[in-house]
Length: 266
Image 1 (tube, helix red, strand yellow):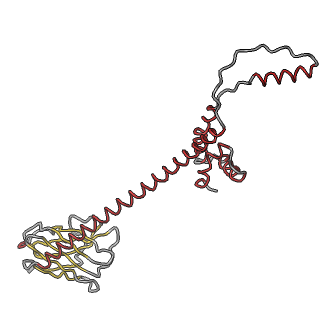
Image 2 (cartoon, rainbow, N blue to C red; image 1 turned 135 degrees about the vertical axis):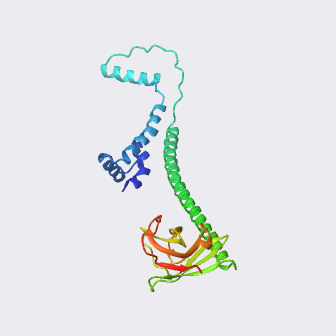
Image 3 (cartoon, rainbow, N blue to C red; image 1 turned 180 degrees about the horizontal axis):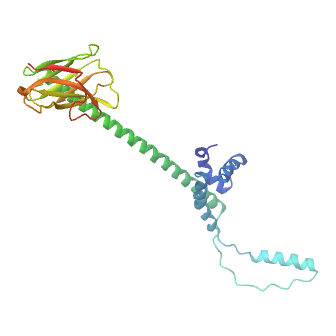
């Protein structure tokens, strides 16, 4: 048996009620200095051992003393001197056998309850982790739904300017962008290839004058879909084109590769 199976036997081992097979297996663990069984038995012994101190000291009765003296005198062949009467001793309470059994049962139940509480605490911790994970997943789903709602609003707005970002590699799918003067820029695509974990796609505004301006970084999802919404960070009249480049994870302050997708703003 392993430590998990031996754990319920600690109290019975201390009480001496285990059968030979279970006792030998547990003692083998103890001889090997098992880091779980040795402390477990010590704890059980700490619970059970105080029961021994519950037994009151016993005093022999006068009748027992008389019988012992008669036996001794008969063996010696001499008459037994009279036993002086002594004052009656006050009777002491006797701890009955059933009370010992009840105390031992209580100790076993206490140990079992402690183990059950530990098991329930572990189960509760697992449930809390699962609940926190479910909350995070639900929050992520709500964020995705809100993002998709905003992307759809930009796509369907009559004030949006649609753009097609053509791929440099003809095997790649088209990327669509929608420029709205107030709601920002939305980017969509499907059938996009997977991106390595150390890389990301980055959207840029290419101004008529000056350096490219980073708009957003994004990655296709597991189904190859892209759905991005980002605010305008420069006037639309100053934008000459939109471009998407392949950059290191986290993005770059300026493009480090030539655009993989480009769309001109007319």
